Image (cartoon, rainbow, N blue to C red; front, side, top):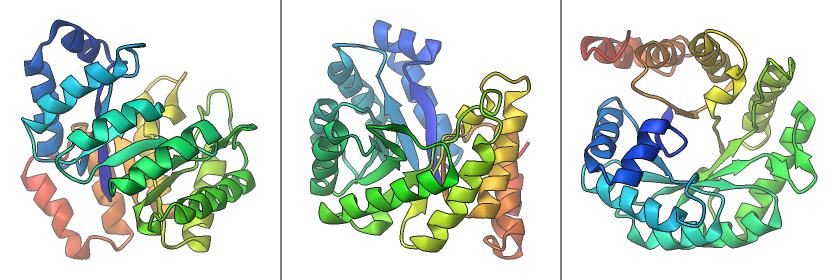
Length: 264
């Protein structure tokens, strides 16, 4: 299970304030605790700094790379920002994200392919978001086709079917779970990914919803996720689900994580 750690995002008040004040200590702390918790990629986002996003993100990237060796996930919808950051990364990164919208697809995909980056591909088109499982799967096929035309291996593509809050769209979780299963069956060379927190907007006990959805998604074939690896209950639910699905022989990874205190 590939983990993209989500905590270094300027939409979080503590991160926003740290970037504004130049407090590298907070960024270093966030990078280290996520790397230590098992992150495969550390997501870096400065999207709230309109007009300053590139320069702010350059600073974050410098601090994170000076702190941990974990590869970065460059999180921006802006091709100029992606293009400005990719030459600075020290290890093959991930890009978050492309859609079927030409302004993002045609500009970001070639940059990612040029730099050997993995790419998160959202099931979203100029006509709107994919709400049904069938539409999500159709968009996934289109995204894979576009990526292949750009010379990107299927193994480098992470399709996000996009789950929406169940508080406002009661069938969104089911549609996303069905889409994950269909994508893994119909396009076995690509990965599936999701941002867990979307599913729980507007409900109490959001963390309970997040980890329950994660377990259900793993059962349907999800093999990567954008999440907070320092959340011990979430991390434990993930490790238990992987063991139950036969992806952790003799539960050795679960036992190791338990002994290290990473499961709560």
